[in-house]
Length: 157
Image: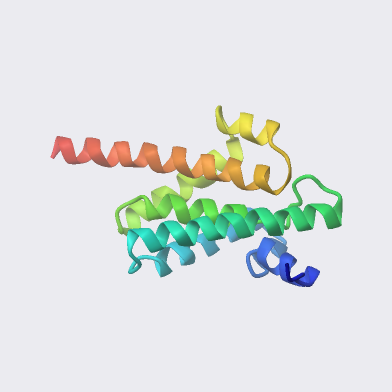
């Protein structure tokens, strides 16, 4: 297998440098996720799923690489997980600025607070997979709750 230079892994793990932000790197990484979700709007559902699967796999690889280089279990500069989680959350929602703002905020809430079952994933899983999976869980919880809210609103109309 071809070995990529360490800087390539850092570039990916930091979501093209978003993780180097001196203020709120996770939020800046999630903003990159908004761009990813927007870029995937015209894509077919299958291509979107494939893109997110690839982003997840790249996130596991790049995060694992940075962990091994820094010796830190969850380096603050690694934000590809926030990019992935925000993008997945938004892709579940109606394409509407209000829903996307709610999705962004809900994802960040669940990512930061890490209630059960997200907390279990965060505490039990290690390495790049652990970094990516707790944000995937936060995305699923945020998206599912907002989809339920959307359904309730539609039902009440």
